[in-house]
Structures are given as structure tokens and as C-alpha cells.
Length: 546
Image 1 (cartoon, rainbow, N blue to C red):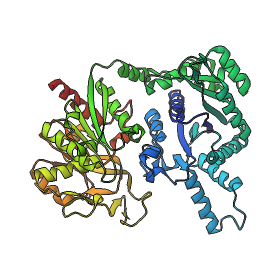
Image 2 (cartoon, one colour):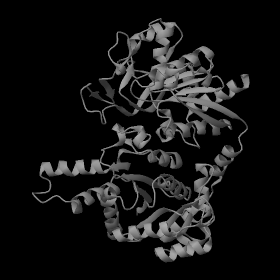
Image 3 (cartoon, rainbow, N blue to C red):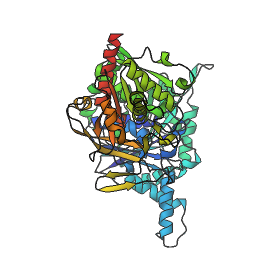
Image 4 (cartoon, rainbow, N blue to C red):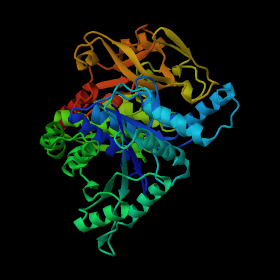
């Protein structure tokens, strides 16, 4: 029997519903239960694929090619359960499906309304495409009181009635702020938020209270009394120094114990039997590293670090694997185009150029790749970062000064060009320059064949075929492959048909690798991605040379 846990938020956004959901999923998983995590997003975009990183942050891509919310990255990193297209839905997608049904005449001429048609579509999403999981955790985006979130809240209210309390649990995440002038924590925001949820018809079963200090017992009693929640189910969620401490902290506060108690699943002898040793080991490595390396990330969205959420975590995972702290030096790539900014890179132990779109800051990324190649600094180019490294090599090694990408405009030497046709399994997908932008990139997991004896083959444990997730519209032009290989830039990973370059490397460089895919999307604290593990190892060796 599958049970459903609905996580809502109130007072302010960015309290950490995604991390809370992921942490609870990890705790339930550690107790032997099968879990699935889902995100309901109330915005009208069909998916975040066409949204600016400044608006939405990172777009997380699943194996089956869905562009989803970054919280699904937290879910995967904490539980290891691969996310699917069916694990993230938006208001835009719900309404698109409902309107499509109306156009087909599926509603038999009836008046299409938010209730029941939209809410039924949401409920169908929540309960479909499951594999007999013990728990499904559904995070509802936004905060209680947002007008766009009302259909989702109404849908989960209905599910609560239809499935019954024995199969549903409502967790509400709120803020308990400390007011310095008053010298005390204030419970009123939590009270108002719980009341707002109750006005919609949902009684919170548990309250998860974010705070920066201990909540006194009398304050917790007050919250429980006014919010109609048992005092022991008012869980304090204290700030922690690393996000990997969250599952441990929540367990110590009794979060998972109370969840299982609600469903009548907790045996007395099981209350303290949870083994969190692997989480404690990760936290220990984060808190007490044996060294430190500095990685310069030359990107174009560095003012909003959520745009590179999975990337930052994957670098930290590489640090955990090598037992070092990874200090991230975020550098806006446009700086290189305005001034001689090489001094920003001189003290770094590695340079990473991440994915991106458009011409803004592209020349700066090319300059960063050149610095890494010429100064023998470990370089990791991801997606756009690989493309800029190939353009740089074409300009410098082949002496083609106007080598560029057609993404930036017409050019004679289009080293990177628009991808209009590619194979996916037994089918051929086609795109055009004038087509829709949303959902039209090369998305999801694709195979890559590695060159035997190459650096990347060694990094992947001498495997000759791998599968990685992609998100890009432009591709490196393999017409320049032979010339570049003669000058030292090896194409060590190709699509199975040998047409699309997937990986480039410089064998006689300490560590210079560019990949067309996004390996950060598959990295986990307990299973760091081999490329990030190896890149940080190279940075450690570089730091010893300085």
C-alpha cells in the first residue's frame, strides 16, 4: 500500500522544502522503505526549459529527457532514485493537458472548470506511474496563500479525504524568526501560516519549523496548541553547516519517527535502529578535510548560484572522494572581455567552464580555456565549456582566427553548429532553427563510446560505453576532428554512430577534458561522479606543485 506525504511551505519561499523532502525520503529509505519524490510547481510555464537561470535557477534533466525543477536534483542526490518525467508537473502542463482533452471532446460537451477537471488532472499525476513504492513524497512549490498554488492545494486536500488519514500525511514547513530587538523567537508567522492552510481545508499533521536557534519548549507547546498539532510533531529544523547534516538533524529531532508513528508503522524496538553511518561519514569528511583546493568556475550566471546547483554539489562530492575541501571561486566570464583578468586564475588549482547559452560571456570562456591549456592548469569543460575549448583549440592550434559557433551568428568556420537531426534509440529526431525553443534540445540520457586507452576510459574504469544526460541544441562539428587530433586535441568519446563528438581531451596535459553532456546531474555524495572525482584529484596534485 502506497502512502502519500504532502510537503507544503508558508511564510516565505526558499525555506528548503526540497531539502526537507529529500532528507525525509533518505530517512525512510534508510529504514528499508521504497520511496519516490515528486514536485508540483504552480507556474504557468510547461517546464523550466525556457526560463532564465536568474528566474528559476538550474534546470535539472532526467534520463528520459524531462527538463525539471532543481529540487529533483536534491531528491536524486539524497536517495539515489532516478527521477522521471512523471515526477515534476507544472500548472502549464496540467492546463495544456486539460485543454487538449477539451479540444478532443473528451469532456462530452461539459463545462471545463478548475474543480473538478484541473484538480482531477493533478490528482491523476500524483497517483500515476508508480512502482508499488511504500511512500510518495509530494512537494508543492511556492507558499500557502499564493493564488497560483490553490488548485494544487485543493487537489491534495481532496486526496487526503479520498485516501484517508491512514494513507496521507500533511507536513507544513514554516519559519520561526528571531527578532533581535525583542530578543526572542516569534511563533506568530507559523500560526498564521498554519491557519492559512486550514482555511483551504488542510489540517497540518506535522510542522517543520525553520529557525537559527533552539526553539524553547514553551514556544513549541504554544505552536502546537494554536496550530492544532501535537507538541512532539512540532519539529525544529535548525540551520546546519552542511546540507548533508540535514537527515541526521531531522532524525535527532524525531521527524522520521513521528512520520512512521502517524502511519502506525513504528515498532518500539525500531525507534533507534536507524543506521546513519554513511551520512555521518560524509559530514565528517566535509567538516574535517585533509586539505583544500580552489576551483575557478568561469560562468555567466554567477550572480545566482542556484543556476549551478548540481555543479557545485558535484564538485563538493569530488572533494569528499579526495577528502579535501573544495573552495569555489565564481568568476563572471564577461570580466575577461573587459580587462586582462588572468590574475583571477593564477592562484586556482583547476578551472571549470560550465554550460550556458548565447554569445554573452562566450569569449571570456574561450580565454579561460586558453589559459588552462597554455598554463597546464586542470581544465573541465562541460557542454558549452567543451564547445568553447574546441573553438579555442581551433583558433590557436589550427590558426583559424575566425573559428566560432553558429549560435553566435553566421560564420565561415562554424566549429560548433545547430544540431538538426540525431538518433534516439531506433528513432530519428529532427529540429529546425525556426522551431519552438521549449523541449526541443537534445535532452536526456544518450550513450557514448570511449576510445580504448584514453584518459576518460581510464577515469570510467576502462568502460568503453557510458550513458550520460544531455541538454544542448548545438554540437561540435566533427569536420575538424582529424585536424585537431593531429595537433593534440583528441576526440576520446563519440556517439555510437561516430558522428557526434561527446568528449575531447589533451593527453599530454595534466588534466584537460571537455564533455558535451552534464555529468554533474548524476553525481551523489556517496557515489561521486568519476569525472569530478578525477578532476579534483588533479587539482590536488596541482596544488602540491605550487
